[in-house]
Length: 344
Image 1 (tube, one colour):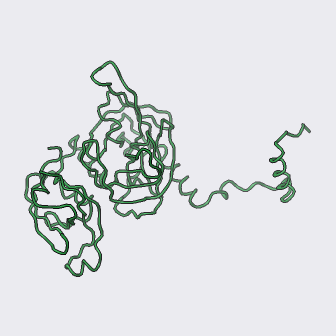
Image 2 (cartoon, rainbow, N blue to C red):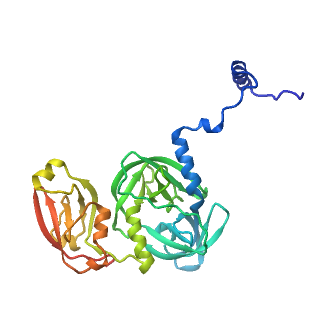
Image 3 (cartoon, rainbow, N blue to C red):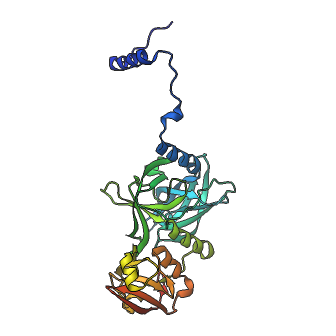
């Protein structure tokens, strides 16, 4: 027999105590038995989704010097086998070249199908026919406290996984255009530069948001654009290359009205939009909407949250008067709002 390996004494003591208790030839526990339910959920999601998450490499001009290029990177994920990839607008906006690198080693050139800085969402096309894809879930059914899993490429470390919970729903976050992104999920799943554009997932491995922002210096406060809003944006990006939306000029958050208020005001829908900010000179302000109001209906349809309001402000609403039912204090008012076009 060969010489016994020379371990540090404290390791040797632990080893010998364990061996004497269970016997030198006791079989090691199966690796699967060492995983608890939480670990199994996360590992399963990563196994299924990880191959579809890519590193996005970009080159952008520095100032007005077309010969000077600055490299950058972010994350993205495939949503169709034939090459549609979701990422953040701020990752690819203005890029002169884009490459999507997948965990299987493929580096594929990409082009921008459409870009919406107002929601920080961009859709890319890569030349591939057999990409693994990430299924899109629903953010409207999320509850605070449920598992959130982020996969991305922070600081260039490809396929990095972090976990946490959904910390809050219906947050509003400023976009690169200065307008507010209304339907934002707050999570404590750790994000770092380079995570931008990657998926935030639920325990079933479905996308509930697109990771978009952190607060420098803060810990455990990270944000993702809710997937219900992203779905709406992607539809327009595919059709028009940009988002054509009605715009009334508010920032808001989802709210659930107390049952007592529903009964007293004879309302049937408990979900609505709490108006947090009204942009001066825009449609909502011209109609008399105020901060603190609760928007109940627009155009005769329930505004059951920010994502629902976005659906009610399609391109067909631009320039067309819409009646809005609004709760202000204890009174219900009817206002007439004429949506403008987003970006104008």
